[in-house]
Length: 100
Image 1: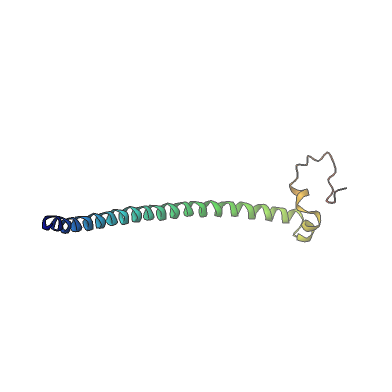
Image 2 (image 1 turned 60 degrees about the vertical axis):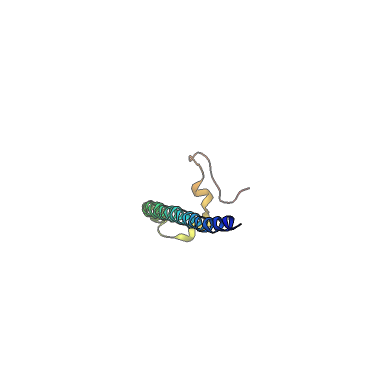
């Protein structure tokens, strides 16, 4: 019996060492993964911001061009309606803003 009790005491420190080793490995893996995820998201958000700035300038230029076409009268755009402005119209037929 004494031999069994002694071996149980020796197994406990080994088991605790294994648990701490597993916890250290888990913390290292999760920490590394989190660091890589944050770096990736930071890179992607930087690229998207650069793209969004470029597309924003394009959209602003198109809006200013549209406003200059209607001489700055925005209310005309609301009366005509967007579907007529963006519909595929080749100019051969009349497009009304009110559908019949």
